[in-house]
Image (cartoon, rainbow, N blue to C red; front, side):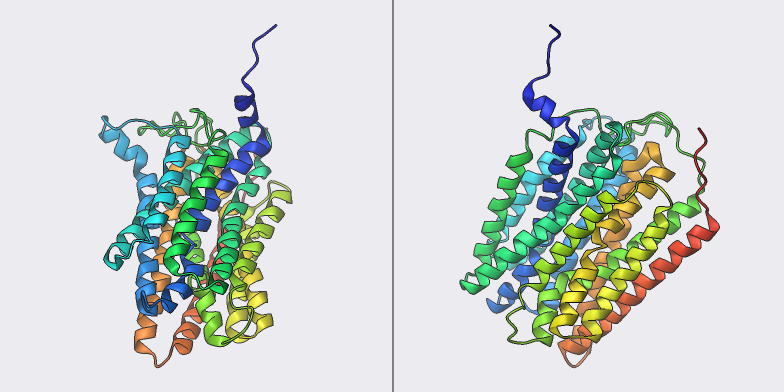
Length: 423
């Protein structure tokens, strides 16, 4: 009889196992490593650990780390080509290391040393970007080879699942009068438990870092040596700019939603539920994406997503009521990971042999937008008479940025029509 693969290895090759591993990895890196700060922020404010402008800069430190991590992923082939002493890792090795680091950095936020918090949040941002880029590359490549590329939409349910979990946990901790430090400890331990649950699936060395090989030979996350189509640089530049506007457009609400809700609806029993509702919207949107027919012009879908998110930002701004915040949370969440999914597939279409580097480029642009959002809030809160006015103006700018992003995609559809592949 021919030898059979070990059961664990066979399970790791199943499409659903790969998609679930990617989903859990992003739940840890994004839902906990990045966004646990949002539901814990009201607790930190209540404990007197920081004020709103300080919270804005702390959020920006995390998003700046995310930007740096994304840039490092983008420059990885260039760096490895010039520094030959650097080892070549498999994607999953970096993902595993990032998940361990996420738990450690989250735990360390319980340390009562405010001067160290910006450094910890910066490092958590770097780690989140690395895990996001290489989890996306590993999962999308494997699922494409298995003939189920649409299933990769499932991995982007991970951030939503992490947001729901952290939001509900923070709500319970608030009801039980826990301190913010206990919340950081709980989330750090939870990150390690989730990472352990998919540790055995995150294996394989087919998708590896590469050291500046020519585009036609690089083994990028597509798992293919096919040359990139002769697309001009302008299309990729417009795609990166539009994706950066998405980062700016959502981040103010995603960072300050519980605080904004407390400003508009003091005493409401729903104050701690808007963030989990946002997470449920993220999960529903990712699930919907995985059910859509694969193919067509993803830029048309991106236009719809940007308009929906802009409407979500506007709903909580112009209808600061229970219904407005629920509607705004859902509309902001539904397209959240769909935007990432469609944009990443645009990268694979434009640069199939260098997808990891260009995913890093788009992630870097997204990071720039995320840094600018909280920085704008901090600036306006210091210059305007009250927090409500500062948040309102910030959200107006955010909604406008999303509409501009939609217009950019509309222009790209007109200027760069997608041509059917020749068989």
